[in-house]
Length: 256
Image (cartoon, rainbow, N blue to C red; front, side, top):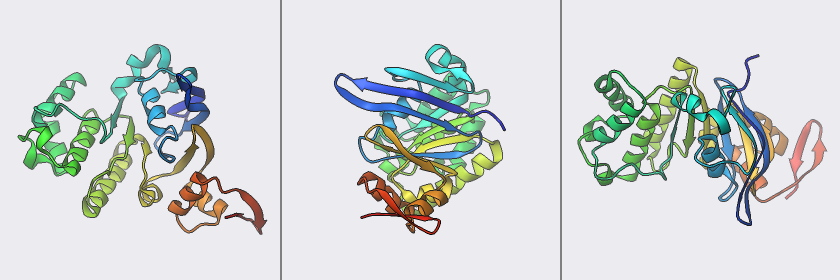
């Protein structure tokens, strides 16, 4: 069995008196799509930021591709990329200019060819020459996804990858991400509030609440464990701290 791509061990992050992440540990398997779920303030964005090296943990260790991110993250980052609809690109630059800057940072050789392929894959070629700041929210989401795919990363960290997309475009993007993972063998860790997206894309789910990991399993395992029909109901049970307290046969049922 191959070692995990991401290994988080006893990681905490304090902001003055606020405990954003509280002693969490988890692994992300190679070539899997894993969801990091939780309500607002659960610690998802803080965790993703620490994985990227944008924030340093208060305590604990993070390893990606068997490399200590606290000491040697620059060895790993060329193999990683991320997207978030909450992180803007320079608004005055055109889409093409923005993507070209990042392509150069990642050392892409055939920049024109890579942009052409991404423009077709994400259906963004028609506004390559428009300033990023003039795009709609959904168009911006697709552009930052294109940025995340520029270097064909071995690990993708995606924060709300289909935020602001209409149902048709969101379905297309999910299909594209599925196909990309199968074709390249990349590993994906995503945060999402769209539970149908989680059920469709994810092999594993990590549930956070108030900075702690409170449950984990495949979507099917969590549905069985909580006796629910869909992941939205499971999410609500965990967010509202409903307890598993009785068992009917092999199925645990949540007490309301």
